[in-house]
Figure 1 (spheres, rainbow, N blue to C red):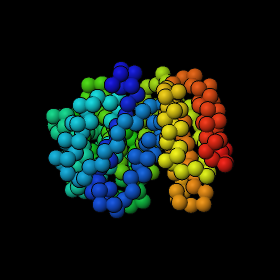
Figure 2 (spheres, rainbow, N blue to C red):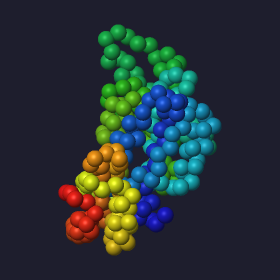
Figure 3 (cartoon, rainbow, N blue to C red):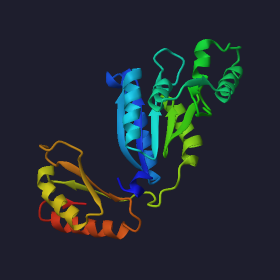
Length: 266
């Protein structure tokens, strides 16, 4: 991976048996993908793992071997027995787990703000036991703090699986820490086609890709291919600065080429 790509590459590891059995849709990774893309980073991979210490340990080690700029884990930070993400991260890093006073203070303040006094049981204190060398990130709407640590050049951030909590910590504590990529946010354009099936579109997109190798072309069927008017969306984008003119030229090329294939192109 080129150096500039590594400096903007991000991986996400979503953890939870509920993801693997289809009980819960992984909307968290989808949200992270949108956030990092619009800020100019590159999401390289999303991995889903079950609530297994061995699986988490191995999954984190494999991700770190690829040396992403940022590795985000989602889920498994709570007080129950199956919340073992941080322990798995610690094993992958070969670090011990230890009580963290800053994390404990965050948890204590959260429970003290409740109407009724809530004691700090061992299960609640569990959320303040972090990998050595890590720091807690405030959770403005929940209990379990996020956690941040470093492994070489990789920043590791562990976030709760509750979507609202994950988003609040990411926006409030993670985004401000990330370096702004030199490439900037992607430049993109969309086309919507009717009256043409994707297999007929394929050679045209191949020509466009050869003509404009710096751009990304992707077709997305939005209806039945056998329908009266099959609908296809074409997405063109690039993370390179100054690509807007190339995208405009590519759109012109596609419209001109496709005009002979489809009765309506817009």
